[in-house]
Length: 291
Image (tube, rainbow, N blue to C red; front, side, top):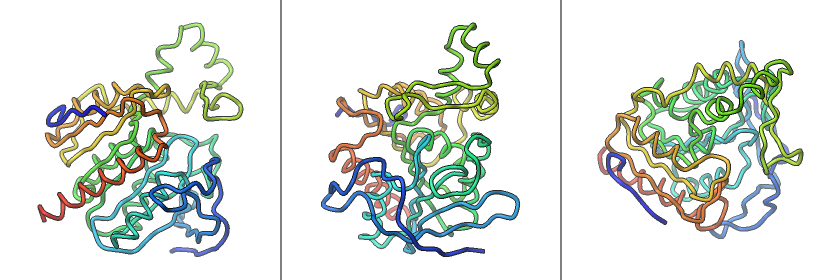
């Protein structure tokens, strides 16, 4: 592991089985099961938008909110490990599914970065009180930056895992012009990935065009809270250099970048999970000391 620090340095309750464990089964992480076979799921009802599925632990602040990645859900390994950690400390914790994903309502084909951004803000505004630490994985790391800009008084720290800020737009724009035109004509982009049985994620052309409105790396990012960015140098999906770009763009001077030499995109090894939990633990200690 290499590290660079500093300046580059209405609720409805329902029960049921937790879905979408993404093949991790019951393999223990930090001595605890990764996947719950049974879990209560709550829904945040919104009159003008689809209902959001979430799981919440009550506890003291700062609370922790986990933001999953593209085509992921709230039952992944990192989310569960953080929930177990927060439970052991008595801290508040929320994991949730974006619109159209996991157990939440909505059609994923109609989703956009802008709509998912509003999902994050709904969770912050409706389900939390007091200071919150956002932990964003991949696309969730992009969304956490937007949430920190929109709610600077509430978001007191960020932890990014393989932050994918602007990545979908950047990847699309690097395609040959002919390929971009073909995608525009078909209205669909099949983004290659090894994390899907089909071998690709299907994204609409309109999704990419809308995502351009939410790019953050072209100008300074007005986020001043402590930020920790964890990235695997063997990440074949999102280059670790994106975390470096985020560190350079944010206004915060309290930024640590942690690179794991053998880490892959999902950062799903036991040592990766320990690193994430320890990073959140250190931030809690820092914020508690400052308070």
